[in-house]
Image (cartoon, rainbow over all chains, first blue to last red):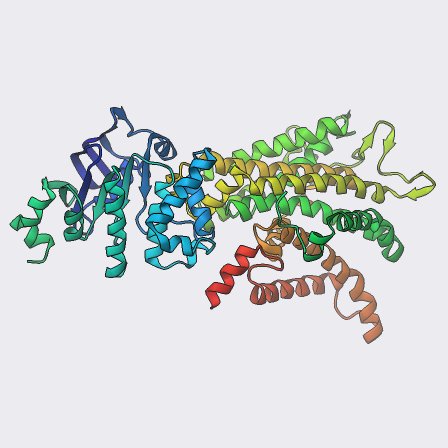
Length: 234
Length: 359
């Protein structure tokens, strides 16, 4: 579904992503793990067209999307949950979700999808009329995921959903990510929390200073001595 | 229509409330003329002009969250379009229904012109660029009397045609149905109609898809893009719409005054309009209207009130009213921002947000 070839990202003269190649098949969850500064978020930002890449190609369902404007990707079926949440703080929870359906105008379907998001996150239903800026970090992350789902994506890009959250909240969020994946959603997950990401995903890529150094089935990576040493603290 | 204008009493008797408001607005110039004379009717008219300006700027600053310190430039564009197309300066005397749309359209073009290079700027950076833009326009107006005399420089343009519809002039005194209407009074009714139109457009915009897109980019640009909003076009649209309201207000200003010069479009004016938006309640249309009326009327009230008061208290004038006016004005701004940071009449969401933050 997504085929990335030799993608490069540079900030001024510094290369953050040095030509990486990976792919995501329809219906699978793929994790991209790595330490701080490995270039994971730059990769995702370039995929979502929030950043201009310095080279390489990104093909999505056979179509080159590396030059499309960011706002067109949603129409193609790609939804980004940006790093650090990215909710609209001065809109209510319900308004945030409605904003996620900005490109759609099938009113009754939107209402149904909203109910579905609330099924995933009962907590959001309770806080429906509250301003998003007043939610807790975990609730904001839930809202960001819910908002992305409201565009009915085919491919969901998640940027560090566990960042800065309490362990109990991280568990809750990953439960929902698993549930969404079980419904058949294709997901590319970017995570620092390697253990959690690999336990959740089917396949994984390990990124180190702008390059992909290792790839395998997630279960195998979990038992790979290199990964265990570098990312699982053993 | 949105429910933002609903007040407790209005819900029960909407028709009665509406009639009451209409009668008050219709009778207002007569009441004002009786108590304060024609000068106050003129001030009333300026208050309405400032409502246009404040609502226009509210689109840019309040809804889309783009801090614009050069907004008065669009007012200037509208004013000069009227002045050039309806005065002896070029010998042109086009009717209002030609000039006003041209003024609005040209201001709109200038809005896009300002918007396009600043698309990637936010906050302080955007404020500096827009401030520069406002000054550029003013300085151009000041100096475009050579090599070709376009604006007549600092002397400005005089003997501008008033608003006329057919043979009916809005500047002279006339009597209709046995009632005497002065020039400013007639302008008041035109402005009032225009104001109602502008307010309806603003309310509709606020609740529209575009309005929601503006709020989204104000809140978080990355998230807005991720939601599929074309942030570039939506921002340009905010600049363009805001500017055209400024252009219309400028045209009416020219017609009312009969004279324009670059002096009327200084940075202080931009800041004044911004203060109206912020003081009233950013992004909340009734609040912005209140801010515009208060900030137009209060300084004038001080100007007219301070002199007799000083004479009464000290027997002579101690402080120049002009100086005192700015002093009191500044103090009022500080106090409002300290005690009502969301503005005098903020939107319910804003008020709740601040309440929740303090809790």
